[in-house]
Amino acid sequence: MSKSPILQVRNISRNFGGLVALSNVTFDVPRGVVTGLIGPNGAGKSTLLNIMSGFERPVRGHVLLEGQDITAIPGYARVKLGITRSFQDVEIFPTLTVLENVLLGFQNQYGEKLWRLVFTPGAVVRQRREFIASALGILKSVGIIDDRPDELAGNLSYGQQKLLALARMLPTNAKIFMLDEPGSGLPRPIVAHMGELLQRIARDYDKSIVLCDHNMDLVLKYSQHVLVLHHGEFLAEGTPDEIRKHPDVLRVYLAKPPEGATVVPLTPRGNANA
Ligand SMILES: Nc1ncnc2c1ncn2[C@@H]1O[C@H](COP(=O)(O)OP(=O)(O)OP(=O)(O)O)[C@@H](O)[C@H]1O
Ligand SMILES: [Mg+2]
Image (cartoon, rainbow, N blue to C red; front, side, top):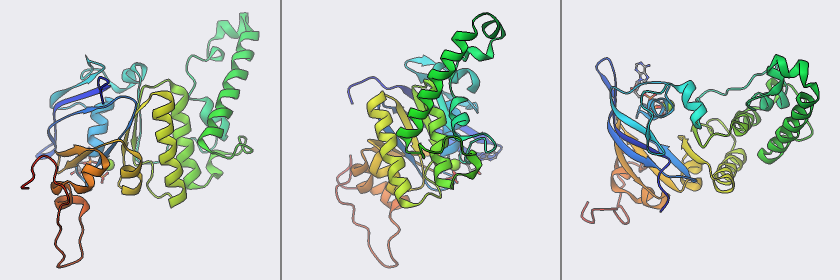
């Protein structure tokens, strides 16, 4: 990974009253790849995504986007800098159509400007046509029912709604996508489809994706780099293969051996005697 990181997280701490949700967390998010973020329930993953995307402030530490300190910049302003995130719950507008949901993601719509509507209606119509064509292309590439763009989004299956939530993020021109549990509750084929899609978005469009999910099939198969949190502390990072074999990760998280079984780390990273 020779490219400079897109995001640098430095010594981030966050408390909720007496509860330490994150403690001195430091890592880089590499550019143009899928970075997995894993950890058991309550590890601090969503809190970390909130802090990286500006929805929460840390009590200590810094977040840098392409070298610029953005710690003090609120979430709505970080969107303009190219950071977008999804939340654990599905976020779509169920009473709008599938196509309308994606169209909402396009920025700088001429139709929103009264003077354009009055003085250059042709340009408004042309832009609308272009956005519709792009939105249909996005729906097709995401694999949502290209023959049902006029279906109400609320009528889609849960899996399709999750894909639609992802499709809505694509027209935003974001550089970095932070996804909180996009795979939760999805059937296996849709999880695989989601994973391939995320890889394709990162590779073909040079986007950086932070993929936080409990679904190990999704994270370890489709991430190029994986970060592990445990009880608010940064536990490990590495390639999926390194994480699968990491003794600390095996100990606290991945290894749930049958009773009486002994976990033997294959090739411990960093410390051969661990
Ligand atoms: N707004 C809040 N107020 C109080 N405590 C909070 C708040 N948000 C998170 N916490 C606590 O901080 C810790 C980390 O929570 P967080 O939601 O970041 O974990 P997570 O890794 O995303 O968990 P999960 O896998 O269950 O989504 C937990 O102990 C949680 O209860
Ligand atoms: Mg969470």
